[in-house]
Structures are given as structure tokens and as C-alpha cells.
Image (cartoon, rainbow, N blue to C red; front, side, top):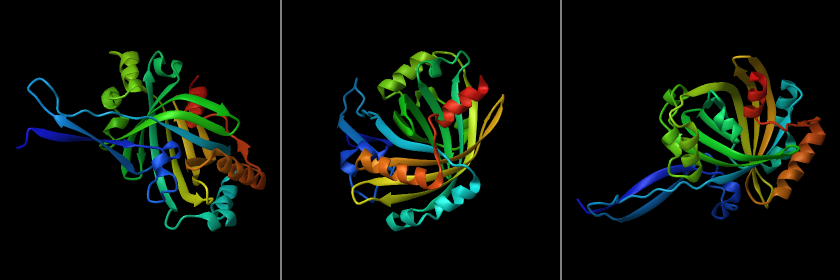
Length: 261
């Protein structure tokens, strides 16, 4: 066995600000970037280093009036004309959001989510969220995990190789994490190419649930994978006007928190 070895760490990324993804149709936000760092080891030194890099998520959110309108949007002819081949799919999503009992994470504008996306399980940290009408931006790190066990018992050390992960560990300390809300929905999505930008179009229909009750989900999300924000806004404005969509200024997490208060 060699004295030098390598260590792989998997990080899910959002492609919109990653310059290397620009116009690369073979990559999307559900594929993994493999970060590889190696060096020679010695007796007192770990041979592997891993580093998590955050991405900035840029997306538009709109409330869809009803499920019938959602069906019509799914068949929109303009979207069909721009649709990338084989990008259309439907997945069942189930998510749980966690915080301490004294809401230490939400007080620091941090959302800790574990979500099952079809056959994948992904843990996410989101922070520094900003909203301007339908436009939402925030920093995020996404890490693939094993199975649904983390929906019941999430591990705060998942993100320890990042600055925000270290902050998460410090904020939580020895306090137990509690499930503050859940969401379950069917996501239908496709990817469109405007010639200058790649945008994922998602229609979510389902429910947000807390101990205080539940609220329905029926919304359209447009996420910028690569390209420019102007294309995202142009497409969002066109669909919003055509289908009488209302800008959604709150994330699913924010709506769940409001419901639980």
C-alpha cells in the first residue's frame, strides 16, 4: 500500500454561479461535484483534507392559484419549445427541518433541512437569505446522506468541513435537535435553455405540516442554473402574467415557522 492516498468528499452544487457550469448541459444541480485533495502523509498528519464550498441559490417563487393552473403550466408551449431533451421528470419529495428548542438556528437565519428526493437523501444548510418580491437568493451547502434515518436523527457534524458547519456545531452545542416542520410534495420539473441561460422550472404540489396544523403547497419555482439573472426574471414575469401568479416572498421553511408560532 502506498504512503500517499486520496480522499473524496461529495458536495451537491447549484450551477448558476459556478463559472465552469456555464452552458454545460451535462451538469445540473442534482449531480455531484467531486472535490479531491491529497498530499503525502506522515505519522502525525492526516493525508486527506476536504473542503466544502457554498453556492448561491438564485430562484423565483410564485404561488399557483390552483392545481388546474399547475397542469396548464406544465404543458406551456413556450416551455416546451425551450425544454432540454430528457430533462422532464416527476419526483416525490419529503423533507424535515430541524432546530433547537430555543430556535437558535432560525434566530441566526440558518435552515437545516434533510430531504428525500426520489431515491436520494440530501442534507442541506441554507443561510443569508434575501428576498425581493418573487426573487430569493441564499447561500447553501448540500451533502448526500444515507437513507431516511437522518429524518429522525440528523447529524450536525455533516457540514463540519465548512465555516457555516462549524457555526452550526457551535450554535447547537449539546442541545438536542427537534423537528420543527415537515413538507411533502410532488415536484415536476424540466430544464429550459434560453440560449444564454439554463433554468430549472419546477411545479410543487403538496403540504407543509407542523404541530400547529398544515398549509397547502401549490407553487412554481424557477432556479437559475447558469447564465444571467435577467433571463430568469424575464421568464418569470412572462409566466406570472400569463397565469396570474402571485410572487411568493416566503420559503417553505418560513411558511412552516409562521404556522408553528
